[in-house]
Image (tube, rainbow, N blue to C red; front, side, top):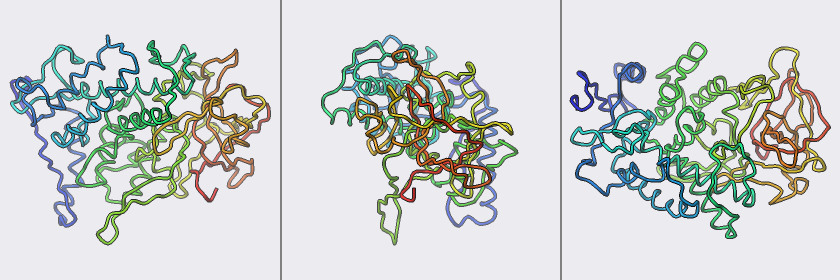
Length: 468
């Protein structure tokens, strides 16, 4: 191995974090310190290597992992018709299912996060092929690239279907040249949305930090850990680099309850990434979770809460790659209201920046709106609701809502679109210390804002639930 990666020293991770409920004081101390030590090693290492035990690259030709690595759909010259691409989804999903048990430490853990980590086979040899991203040998990136590419193409197909076969947004990132028409079979559309959800949840689709933290969070539940808490610490200290944010609000090795960890995690994520954390749909479904009572596991449903965002419960709407621009220039988040999360009341606070400033909120008006795209999520995944499905004034969820305009989107019929945060049950009533209350309605693209408006210094935004 040292010969193949051209280095003198190799540090091997043999699952050296102590686990279990009864470790004793000494091992508890080791556990609290070990993750911090590992992060320090990884950050200062010249290279990182993942050892693939299940294959010999020179001999094997049909393993699921090798098929994923060599999937042609990820290559730059691949311009297959979207209908053909959809037929490959079942095969790719089957390869993912097969690869996970055979290489569970790679495919079902945090090891899919360091994209530049080199892959070597059981003989210590690099996985060589000139088609890989670096033109030489495989890295984790070469597993993620085909999954990301396939996910992008499926998201394009659904987006164009939702637009009824017309992709008029010439600025949309990754805009396809392939033909795609509205699908007549509702089951085919549902299957398409389910596949997008499955691929994003794999933790391999667009989950580099450049794509935004929501991609990384979306794959959290597919990564297995001996301790549930570690699934957050690996993201906090590793992929998202949050260990020193604002003096270390999130401390590695903290033994607090998981729910408290999630609240701390969400607060620091929102503090660092701001509106990137809110590129979310409106959740139409309840959260399903497994709980063990008296030795029996059961599936329960509950209303969603803000901390479900760090669980990856909501998929990023940036999957559809709609081009957005700030009215103030290229910096997308420049001049926008400031976000923060309250530990105490599970509420998101939106403040209008420096003292004295206020946000301009627009009341929705079905007479003025010429077109809209409301992003929602049900049990089958992301979906887009537009006038193709229901008139704005006929949708009970949208009637009486308010908009917080954020970015410009494309023009339709000479009207400039606005990406807005949809505010439900907003009535302008001041509820606490000058703040007004609203319920989160997800992101919406709107063409033709109304004229009725009001000013707000601060919004306290709650999750949707029956009490609303």
